[in-house]
Image 1 (cartoon, rainbow, N blue to C red):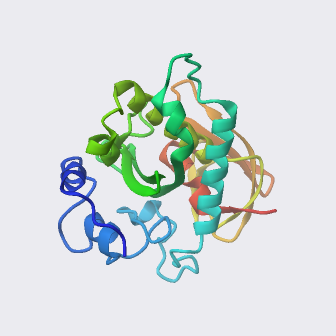
Image 2 (cartoon, one colour; image 1 turned 90 degrees about the horizontal axis):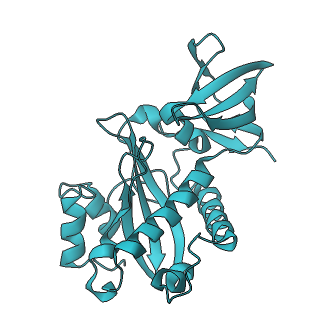
Length: 254
């Protein structure tokens, strides 16, 4: 049975709209496992079914554990890779974050939802000293880089976590997310109909269970991410919010 969050954690999550008190809410879901599984191992669900891999009731991918090994293993690989590269804080004085960085494990994306600003809110969870904490990046794909909100920052056991520490942790996890969202070149199988734009700017869908090839991915002049794919010898673009759902909508062909 999972440990119930302390009063302070509950207030933090409620204040930042990370939980709601109605039945089937994130609070009930995280604590008592009463809500259906979403984009991770029994966590969360997409509010807009148009941006979820579970859009179709008859989809073979409704099993919440289907993509768990793929997601968790890849996120852990990214975390280790970024740590080996260095987190970019070469201070000579004692640094609490550097001392703690290896204690951040089991990083998960709980769910991704489109907000009223038409940007994405990314909800995450991670383990710190063998205890799970929750967090969120609001307006993740906005022009300005978002800062991590987390119940860890209100936990009285970790009063040494100051503004500088928060900024480093926020950047560290943000880099992990950006790297994981970035698709690699190669072939993929579509798990659902994928909206794309052709070279004339027209929108259409590539059907489920089709083979596509990622040619490249980059950012446009406004800083928006996009992917160039090839399907039946024709190039298409996946951009804006759809870019961040590519790994949910497809599966790598080894």
